[in-house]
Length: 250
Image (cartoon, rainbow, N blue to C red; front, side, top):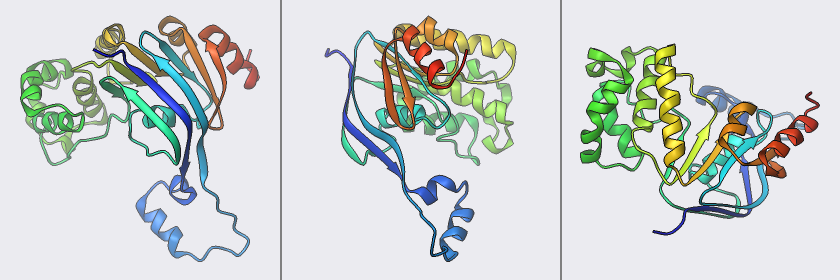
């Protein structure tokens, strides 16, 4: 089996500015219908700027940067969710990502049915998901609610089910975005243990976080993002200091 890797060469990614700024389809359409003032200067958002790097099997890489610096965009680009505007992205290995937990739920379907739907989105077979169903239901701790429509769930219940599904199987390349707030203390303890197990099993980890302690415990290499560009790449302890210096933190 080939060693997993991530390779980016001169990657640029742009968002359409109007879509990036609007938070709803209704607001977006309303904005498009309004006549823009003659002096309006609407520019695309350059979310990733000429990113070139290699991450190889065995590495544990932490991503640092202020909100909007490009960390989450980088992860989603590596996961194949965002098409790049220029450059190339190569990823070898089975990718598992833990972000966008709301993705893939059908509100009118039951929790049990959504296990299958979300599994398909993750690239897993129906037979595999049926084999994992009992474990997922037990981990989520939803009881009889698993046979109720998702639209009857609280936000916390939805996150617990999504987390249970998304972490039911690991991968060679593990992409994590921040810590998941998934419910009560007992569930959070189990969630933390499951993440630690996934990290231990993965050949390659990329973690975006503001938690310096987690970054130092889990990672050896750090990348500091600033306005879509990587301004530091080196040992994680040095990356944390570079991030603090850039943001004038003690």
